[in-house]
Image (tube, rainbow, N blue to C red; front, side, top):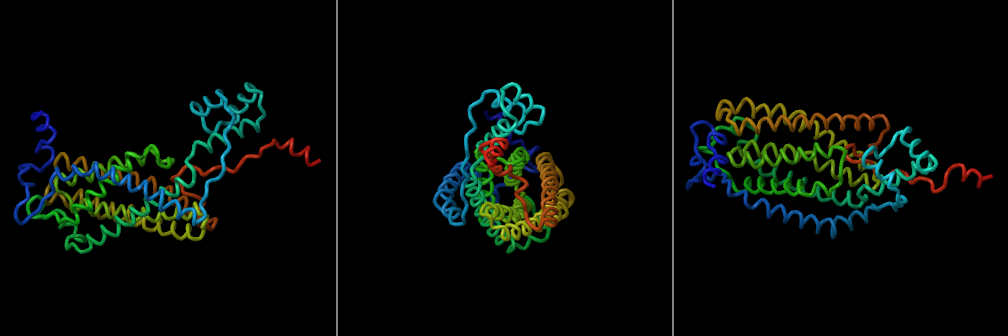
Length: 363
């Protein structure tokens, strides 16, 4: 076991050449991050899940009801093994050829087959209330974390000077308790998000978000272990600066408050592109790749984490194109249609009787 731990915590992997774990031991005057500090993260993540459950049930839900958010009634499709198999193994939205084949096989009309798949898609989606309360929780955390993080960092004399993120690395940088708790709570939050990803609202970018959460956990935890908490805390606050706009816009959209949704989405788009396409790549990533070379240099663990920063930027670019598409639609139509990162809302209820039958009744 001791030999395995020596391999896992190899100084040649985690630390710059010539440095040892002794360099990360706190002194009477300088407090340094300790890997043992992260033991509190799992229980704290569980606590956040409990707080989330209570908040969504007793605070977010009544608030959403007050805002007029309600679940649409959904009708179950009649049991059908063949359609169910097509739904899971072929497509949730079968094309004309598949529909025609099902009509011939089942003896159903085109209308009835389409109705079955519409109802099946609707019942497989989370209710609107679940989506709304989830967004309320994320909004509460993101805005609280951003206000706290920005309030803490703005008072640090090294915040705006990227050189100071690395000067004195492993020797003179002291970890204040406010930064420590900012790190630990953010890490616990993303652990809770990753652990609940299968039950949360499933978006079109499910795998991208899962990768994002996983990489974020590795970056926050890894940068804390090797003592790069200054640039790490800057990265966290930059990311938190836009997310609460999006979650509040979602709630407004679910409540059908169109003007409020539009205004919040504009705020999200502006902060997203400023933080993720300007500040993050040209200030943060630039410092992580080039400025760090002057003071700490590259070493295996830092090189891997730096590559993760650029993976995040690729995700930012992909999401940015989706946001730009919604901005374009908003410019043309004058309103935000829907959240492009979410699955479609419930589709319009299908008619209960076929058009031909209805036409006969009208006659």
